[in-house]
Amino acid sequence: MFLDESRVQVKAGDGGNGCVAFRREKYVPFGGPNGGDGGRGGHVIFHADPQIQTLYDVGTVRTFRAPRGQHGQGSNCTGRDGEDLVVKLPVGTMVKDAEGQILADLSEPHQIWIAAQGGKGGLGNQHFATARNQVPRKALPGFPGEEKELCLELKMVADVGLVGYPNAGKSSLLTALSRATPRVADYPFTTLAPSLGIVQAGEGYSFVMADIPGLIEGAADGKGLGHQFLRHIERTRVLLFVVDPWDPTGDDESEEQRAVRVRETIKTLRGELESYHPRLLQKPWLVAVNKVDLGRVVDPKLLPRSYYVSAQAHTGLKPMVEGLWKEIKKAREAAKPEE
Image (cartoon, rainbow, N blue to C red; front, side):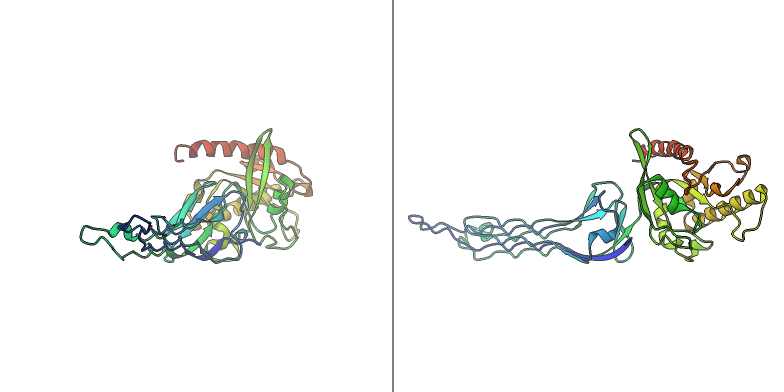
């Protein structure tokens, strides 16, 4: 299963109560107050873990509670702090409040954020001794821990995002290039959830590729499944448009006609990305003209930026991976000053 949106409750631990106690020892008739402070309540901490892929991996828990701090004790003993509760989330998780305001963006591996602060412990009666009140019987209760309702929204982090119509061959291409095993079938919308795969680009070099569920015209307006998953394209460095050049009606076409179809498909897909967020058009992009094993497709001169591949026959993949790796390296270098 894949889950990229979730609503959770977080409750930090309350602070322990301060203690009212007095020193009572033989030959010490006026020992005075020695009540210790309460311990701090545990924090609820979000941790971006690279091993977690989706919010479904977090489990079915929807309320996260950290333990409270221990109460103070006599002999000036401070109560033990409550243990922090660490919640592991996938890298790329955005945390929002109930009104939709962004509170944290866990976009880097092992990034942490305190979602709810534990309450401070109450003061023991040792703090209230004065010249006029040498036997204080007053201590403070612990402060309550923070409690919030938070919205978690996952935007997958990948180097390459596969974009295309349903049945263009995106899942097959990801399977051919990596060890990912997305569902592959011969009907539209086989892919109902994004999938990640690691592609080897050379000796010691690799990158992450994401298969995004198929878009249709009008996806940015909420049609089909595209609008639900368009957010995952935002954090990809390079876009790879996967296009099926063949006429679905089975009619014979010239290479020029197939080239026109490919260009129109890319134009439509880029238009949906622009409608969702114009910034997506600034990303570098390439085209994978798929299913070339079915026959001669298009003259390469008619379609620049294109690689002619067959995910089924595993042909033409190496040059495409090399081209993607070049674009990824440029994008990584360009992002270094910002990071």
